[in-house]
Length: 136
Image (cartoon, rainbow, N blue to C red; front, side, top):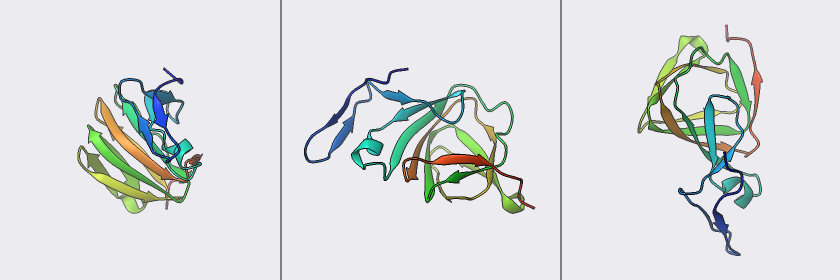
């Protein structure tokens, strides 16, 4: 993983994150890779945009959790992720689909394709995660 990579910026605030030299950062799940797109620094921590990818499917559900943020937006680039919400609602987010999850919304990642890649945006950039009980 590279922590020194090409993210170009100038006085205008415009940031370019080069695909051929990605900035990889630690993330919530050990089997996933996280590519920072330069938005966190450019926005002064107001927004985070990253590519999350995995080359192995989820072996077991992540467990019920909430994200401590105003909101989380995902756009599936390839593959799929199954998310469970209160009331037994299960949604498969597949390539080309997007989903907005308000902050503090309990959910559980229950399955994924063998490989997947998604764009994730959160407000603010520092999105905490806390485990929670399954909704009644």
